[in-house]
Image 1: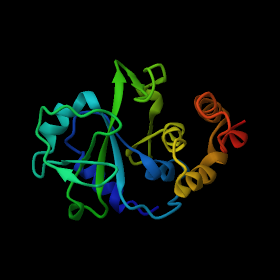
Image 2: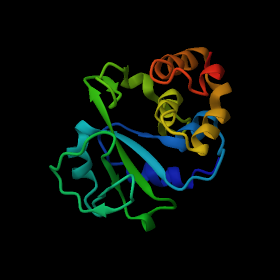
Image 3: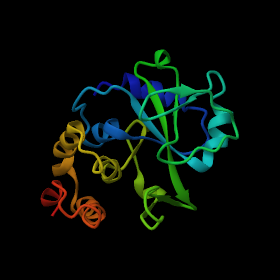
Image 4: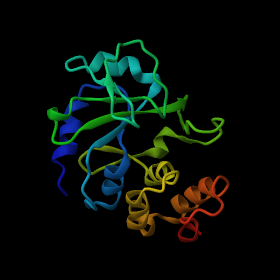
Length: 193
């Protein structure tokens, strides 16, 4: 698998003392151990409670705050509160083989908490963490697909179709049981049943 961009992320985070995960489409590629499609960037997930660690680690260059809808960027000052979901930090696009974006995750103690809803959807941080043979941490596929299930973008449906058969029954049931109550007619549900 071509990992130049992921090795660049690992080098970038080498001194970062908090947890981080490769997320998005790259996480699904790591799960199935093949590059399934071209990627325009690399999403890296960190815990929102660790923003002070992000600020202390990434000082030169300091990431900027990016509007995920428009791509507009503005300076980020340490101490500024950013929230999971809309809070995205971006490094200058020309520093790495692909743009690197930091997404923020809600958490409570040792649990990841889905930032949408009332905080009732959670999973232990150790359970959402998978690691490649050479030590790159990435987000469990059922979480990546949960985020993608809210979209009707063709690439998200393609991502689901590419990896659905690789999900074991536990991951498949977990994802089904999280999508069905909110989207009872979701097109992915038959494949997850």
